[in-house]
Image (tube, rainbow, N blue to C red; front, side):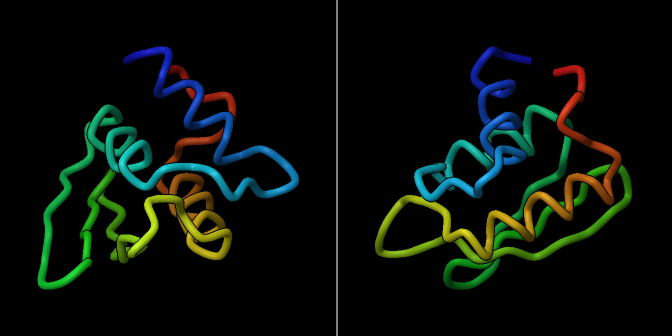
Length: 88
């Protein structure tokens, strides 16, 4: 995985919560971690990582992830076994 993935993980787990993380970077991280990502109607994104399933909605019209969605992504990664010290 790339340096960009490491930076995205660091940003996701940073405190205080950041408001400038691009959703595309988060999706790219999911894929880099080996997740299966599928797209539904509208802005729905379904992610399966380590047999843990989550459904997210892409932010729109802006490209940055809302802080509430960022917290959901953080919880999801932890549940899927990916923490701030993950080897990427």
